[in-house]
Length: 113
Ligand SMILES: [Zn+2]
Image 1 (cartoon, protein in one colour):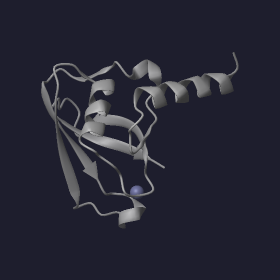
Image 2 (tube, helix red, strand yellow; image 1 turned 90 degrees about the vertical axis):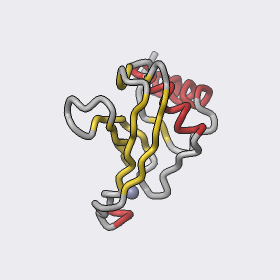
Image 3 (cartoon, protein in one colour; image 1 turned 60 degrees about the vertical axis):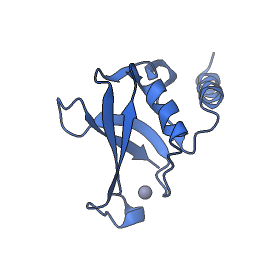
């Protein structure tokens, strides 16, 4: 199988798993069941530090996620349930990262264009 087929397979899978996402999911299929945190409740921050918002470093939104199994898959399903969208050019969810190393409750979306 060549890389185009692999890419298509990933795309098809993401589309069938998350048909109602209002953002693009760039988390590799094989990472979807990686556990982001062992906590039952986490907060994920959306930053506006991008050129679409003139590198605004003050504006932030916070979303609360509660789940017994805090994997990428479950968090993305919850993002869709909460109707989260990113109204700027940065539509590609590339990662969900701790805001500080060793912080297991505070995260931020890492968005690409
Ligand atoms: Zn942006």
